[in-house]
Amino acid sequence: MVPVFQHGKKALTLVILLSLLVAGCNFQQEKQRVSEWPNAVFYEIFVRAFYDSNGDGIGDLKGVIAKLDYLQELGVEGIWLMPINPSPSYHKYDVINYYDIDPEYGTLEDMKILVAEAKKRDIKIIIDLVVNHTSNQNPWFQEAIKDENSPYRDWYIWADEKTNLLERGDWNQQLWYGLGKNKYYSTFWEGMPDLNYDNPDVRAEIIKIGKFWLQEVGVEGFRLDAAKYIYPDQEKEKNYAWWKEFRKAMQTVKEDVFLVGEVWDTATVTAPYLQDDGLNSTFNFDLAERIVRAVQQGKDTGIVSGLKRMREYFKKMDENYVDSIFLTNHDQNRVMSLFKGDVNKARMAAAILLTLPGSPFLYYGEEIGMQGMKPDEYIREPFVWSTDKKEGESRWIVSKYNREREKIALETQIEEENSLYQYYKKLIQVRRSSDILVLGEIERSKVNEIGIVAFKRVLGNQSLLVLHNLSGVTKTFSLPEDESVYKKKFFTSDKGSADKLNRIVEMQPYSTLILAQ
Image (cartoon, rainbow, N blue to C red; front, top):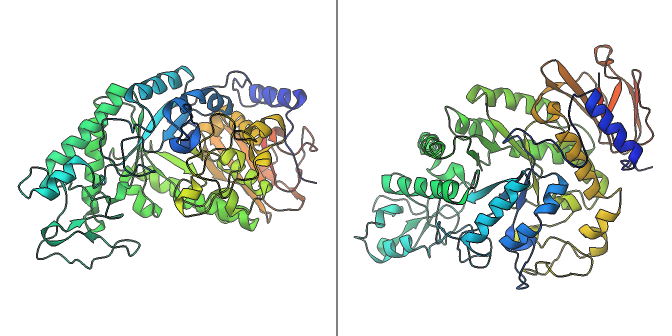
């Protein structure tokens, strides 16, 4: 029998009482506690695909405003908006103007209203800041390529007689584009020429841009695209120095600015970006891969041991660092597709993510089980709000992977107490009900059972024992003697388990159990 989480009054009462008596938290259905920023549950939004407010088929900022109540009800505390600046592309990672909003999405005034309305709901907003490169249609680049004597010429990187034009990048991609004297460096593709950060005018302009969005618009920070590519690998020390310079400048405007960098690499490459007042956070790609692989295989793949090592290493760089954790994002195949549509596995991945330390980032549509596989357009399909494409649905692309609208649609899942959406919502509520789950460290558990991921979350002298059964079979096992003090259920997704436990634990397939002392 597939385990389900109970959403009835008795189960809710049990969660509230245990939250109050065991965890010492103020957990309420109507008003959840607000996490200590930036230790928050974030939600990544591709504006184009989210909600269309004016009927043109393209999601927009007013559409995000219209759905703030939905996000608040889900339990979201932070929003990451993918690029919103004017751009010639659908994804907008090639910026033409850093001081404005793409007309497809609205106006700067719309953005200011969004920030203000989000704050009313205790939701803070960070935006994608794409500063490794610009669009090749950016006026800076247009002037630079037309006039070798332009002051913007040195804002970009140009080949000379010593340049190796056959040089390849990290994924064996072409790096040099253009003709004659106008051969320029571009990490990603010819439409995105890299900026030259050896030029102090470039660094000053990017700092000016950052301050504008913090001070004039009111965002709380930035997701920093391609943070490791500001300088090439052989000049990585310059990368670290730049992000320290940027953070210091941003803190003159907003002391608690949140800077999370996309450094898609191993912990040893990622960690130095946090050192000595560098970035506040980086995305933990290694952990995401471990979670997905563990759920796919139905067994622990070193989630706890690997994460504990990483956290100890990161804390040597910055004891106040924030680990930005996630399952997949806009550059990766959607997690539900990786699980071949298996809702049980999607629940397990969500449960693991939302019980680990760090700031969890959810990719829009993940909570309703949206699917998608590359190319990129199809991992960014429109959010499925309704069963019959009612007003507000984005039509920016015809869905290839999310056509079973009756099954996926949010309006359906809201009405089903055991839906994936309701499970995500309950997990977020449980997380936010406990300081231990929000701020606690992770410690290994001595539980050693195949198919079980077990760990402790510890905050001061308080702790919780977290158990996830990733397997498709019932698991019965004994708690180690020194962990037998965990007898009270704080949370369970298995309706049949007893309220109090002895050392013997029985867990249904694909279930989660959190125990308190």
